Amino acid sequence: GQQVMQIPQYQHVQEGEDFTTYCNSSTTLSNIQWYKQRPGGHPVFLIQLVKSGEVKKQKRLTFQFGEAKKNSSLHITATQTTDVGTYFCAGQNSGGSNYKLTFGKGTLLTVNP
Amino acid sequence: NAGVMQNPRHLVRRRGQEARLRCSPMKGHSHVYWYRQLPEEGLKFMVYLQKENIIDESGMPKERFSAEFPKEGPSILRIQQVVRGDSAAYFCASSPKIAAGTGELFFGEGSRLTVL
Image (cartoon, rainbow over all chains, first blue to last red; front, side, top):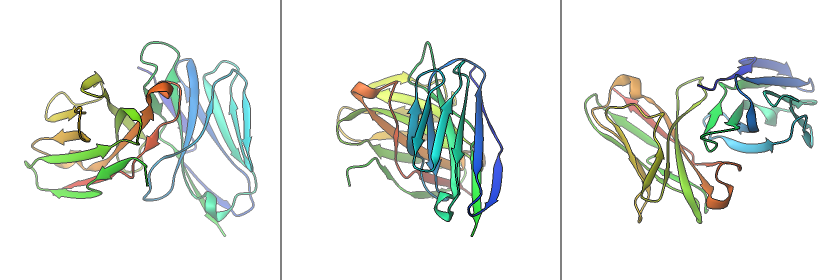
């Protein structure tokens, strides 16, 4: 079945440093979504990428979708303590059960003030 | 707050008991998904339901687990004869009919099950 791998599993940074998490799918995706989960909280949708090579920005966050639609990345510039949490990518297949999101294991980001 | 409502937020059960988790989707949403999250793990798809229909239960264990989404009332995830390995956070998510398959999921705050 489809697998979504995410690295790194953990990342600890000093406030102000940049952060990147990478996501790779074993199959071609129709789209990829990113979610953030604060400690003890629930996943909250951040963004969806649909087009090959797509790049989207939300303030300090930059999201990319690979040309082959099999990988994606999230980059945070100048991290803040409010960025703490686990960032998940989630892919939807390009065929078949296109409603099913397959989540990566997430990258836990901690920020030292 | 018209978000996805889950209850109970925390549930403690002894081995062999039953756990019932409830989920009321956002208003206007007719698609419900259940995901399970183990500590430091991602979310594992369990089941996808529409009103009165189970569309895909491929992520559900074949035994002891069942889910429903009746015409009236919340979706229910039922775990019979719980074992310690069932301890996890169970998240419900919903999506509007139009966005199913292409749009974001709205997650509830989760039900955290602890089996003693």
